[in-house]
Length: 255
Image (cartoon, rainbow, N blue to C red; front, side, top):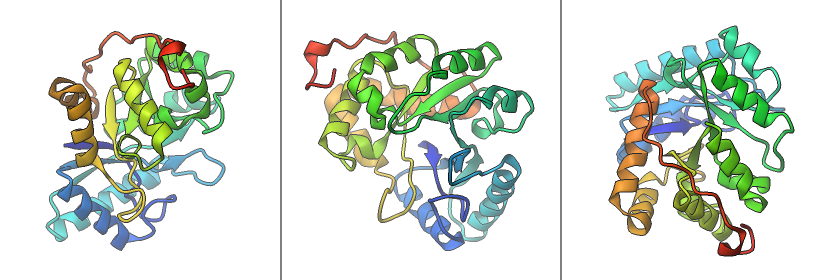
């Protein structure tokens, strides 16, 4: 299994504090059945800037340590990029990391409480330059919760989304769990990932999330989500179903 979103690198953001925590996360990942994990430290937030060279250096160092410790896990480079007006220019100037440096997919984070007014145009412009934005944890965005048709519009216009495993397993509460399930039901999610920060809190929950998806939606959808993670890592085209537009009357006072 491939995990596309994690905070396993030591000392770059609010994830692992040091190499020992990184190794603990790595061991926990292996127990979850994860063989490859993308390190995606926060970048361009008010608190964190994990520049490209720092990430690449940390990934190389951590992979060497994993080999020394005989931990069967490969770490790949990436960033969780907070949306900002200069993303496209920074992509063109090779200042940002796509997933595994595949020059195709990049993780984009929206602020929890809002969607910037320029977001639709920016994500469209990113696509016109040959890159695909992947909106991370949309289920936790307050605007999408209230106006899910906004998420539908982003997906219909070519953006992809990544659901968080712990949202599906209820770690963020019942409302976000239900919203995550509705996102899946309406074909608005393309991959799942852990967004793991620590072993004990905000951990992986990938096995549990996979069981939840299989029980609720069947093994074909689960297999598609898992295969899409491999394809995204490799920079290949994903399996994408036509999204369904949310209908407000169907949902629990949110849609």
